[in-house]
Image 1 (cartoon, rainbow, N blue to C red):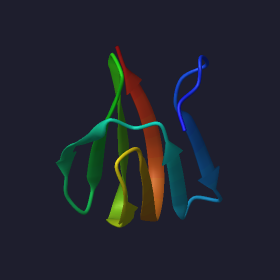
Image 2: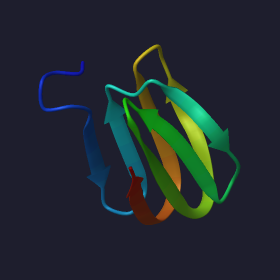
Image 3: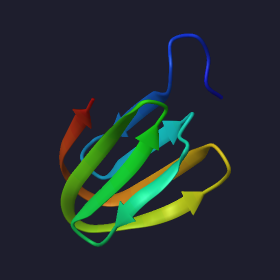
Length: 72
């Protein structure tokens, strides 16, 4: 759920990323997932990345997460 603070991103170790309040997937492969978060996007990079779950406004990414970058 997205509130006035914006999307919520939770990182569990370097193996899982949980995103609430996303607006969809822009691009996706096993080394990068780009997610639309309102007016910005987040690029999650790593190895063996996969979308474990995707709903209308949330996503769970599993794999070896190396970096999360916000692009305005």
